[in-house]
Length: 145
Ligand SMILES: [Zn+2]
Image (tube, rainbow, N blue to C red):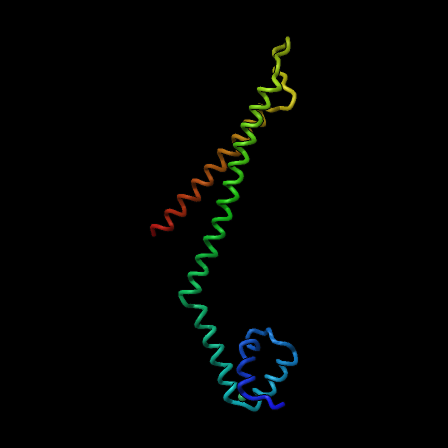
């Protein structure tokens, strides 16, 4: 089978991106040695791809990627905030159900350290809320620019 320029032109984008098979690469390289028209076509593909990298479309894609990254952090801290609130309230409810007592020496005895845990989760909820607020403010400042 004769390899025509049309076949090579179909394969050139794959060759340019280094994703064609070894045999196809050899075939294309042999053809390129003898065919100036296909060499020009390969150069044209290279120029077009470099031009595409600087277009608006790529900028939009980069913005989407950036926003997605920001949304990941927002989601993480929203999850942490919700978990912390639920855990904190759960600790306080459990404390009220289990109960506690004060010893003769004046020490509070409660079996699962629920009060410190409730404060700890409360602190975690507070810091997550603050971070979410900072993210929202930062995003608003970027959007108004
Ligand atoms: Zn050719």
